[in-house]
Image (cartoon, rainbow, N blue to C red):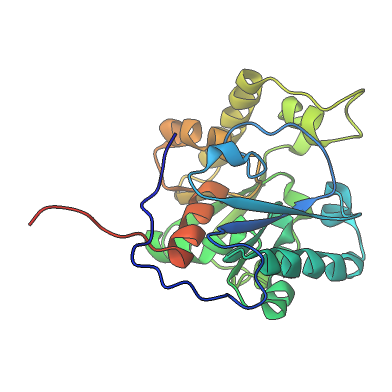
Length: 261
């Protein structure tokens, strides 16, 4: 078991309105049940910091991604964010990359930092690779990405990014068995090895279609388990929910440094 260094010389003062102390990241889950490989946001055993969850009741994946009236789910999303804040969470995250749609609204509703989508990393990636290269944004489905998803996280429309859909055309069958209720019979299930193989092949194809790709953003919270395999294959910076969660925790719970002089 790993233990982090404790804060020393604590003078304890009540944190008004917070039920817990020492909390970390609060994650808003969609209202759906499916298994989560290590590295998936909803598998807390994957991460070295405390995580608290709250379900956005009535908001499943299909509604979040494909509903033509997403605003009807905003109030429930904000309720979940506020509850996580009351519990003591130091930052709020959304489970699905398409939660980018509510980035500004949720940020304005709470008093802790909000990271609703991995797409927040697009601008950062653009800044570090230079304007002569493009950022590859690998979505679960390319056509489901709306302009508001991008503008809500500060991305300039038409700037140096390209978009791909890893599940488009029925690809990545294992993901359809996990998340696509229209494609499965019985409970959600998936093979890790088959999912990794399909995902890496799809990511490589996306990379090869854009020979000036300087970095890749993995949109979905289910993609980080395969991020390292993708990076081994294409050898460029890969941004995922894992990189964003690590960053989010580091800015709200900065570590101490220990070393020699």
